[in-house]
Amino acid sequence: MDKKFSGAITRTEENRLSYVRWSLDRVDDAKYGQDLEVLESAVERYERLHADMRDLQAQLAGYLPRGKTEMSRVPSRPANRTVPAGRDQRLIARSQVEPGKKYPEYREELRYDFFHSCAYCTMSEFEAQSIRMTIDHYEPRKARPDLTNEYGNLMYACSVCNERKSDRYPPQEARDNGQRFFRPDEDVRADHFTRTAIFLEPVTEVGNFSIQTLDLNRRGLLKLRELRKRLADCDPLVSEGILALRSFHIDQLPREVKVVPQP
Ligand SMILES: [Zn+2]
Image 1 (cartoon, rainbow, N blue to C red):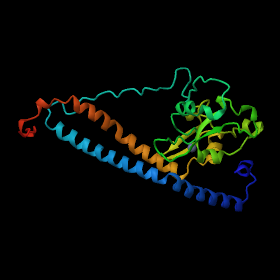
Image 2: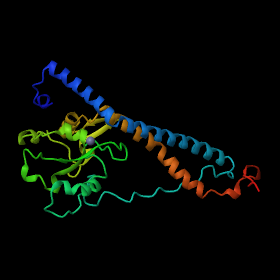
Image 3: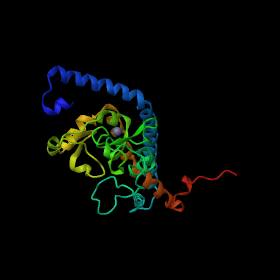
Image 4: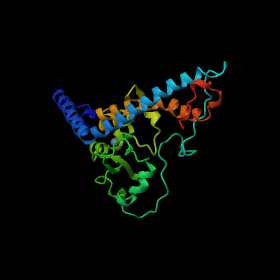
């Protein structure tokens, strides 16, 4: 991989790299493939709810008085954790932590600050429960032992990204050309990455370096993005639909469609 960036990669090495990636995908599948299947079946249930909700809305709209063909839309509630003001759109804002601790002792703070998700691939503990989350040193311990216990150098990362990141410590000259890892506590994601359907595409060299080195289009992540998209497609109708139903005027329904309670 390092040779690829220095431009010294041969065809055989390129083929070997593809093979290694393919094998790593197999390992990932074994690690959390089953979790993604569980997540997928949950998404399927949600999609069924989405379809039922749409049918119900259409059916109920038929009973509403003329001119009121849509149920009232209820504004969705804002998320309770938003990006702090003044931090642009950086995803991660670090908590103030007690200095002087050993790095493993910061695990819970990191977990909270990183939304229980990997700093690099964004897979969360909720999405793949068997995912092993690790503490990554942005500047590796080997190269920067002085930053070993420095909270600002610690990243919450899945074991897959952490292993792929390894002890890479790009020299300054390479960093000046953008060959460094994206970091969500300092960089704005949209500055470096864009998306074409479920594929992450680089906008900058930092994006390119991170995608290539960490293999951010690996099979498990493509699956995850597809599932997230399916969930997001259902979300507005399901959540707003349920709230709208709560305020639906049942008394306006014709007598024949009202359920008569059994004695
Ligand atoms: Zn990851």
